[in-house]
Length: 123
Image (cartoon, rainbow, N blue to C red):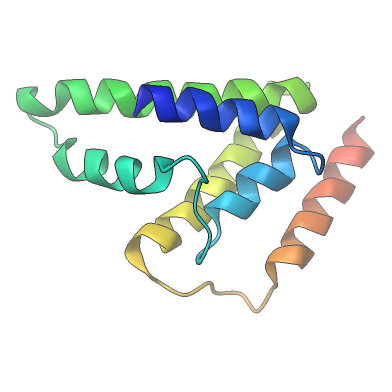
């Protein structure tokens, strides 16, 4: 999973639409990481329980989160805002993993456009 995460972070950094767009786009229901990170992440979540046996899985998940946040931080220089974008992506990703529909009546394009406007206003 760490190898796939590193490759995914490379793709985030090289995406012509930017790291935020890549991160959110691959977090949306119906989309996945092109390097297979989505399925691997889900499998790791299943074994990352609160017991001692889940420690390695939790550590790997923390590394994946750190990779994504580091890539987002290269585009978003405010660490709080970068983390907020990551949390939005996490929420979308949770829906992807569980198959739950998006709520709120907002399209993914509207979400991304609004985030871009907010990010532009902060710079």
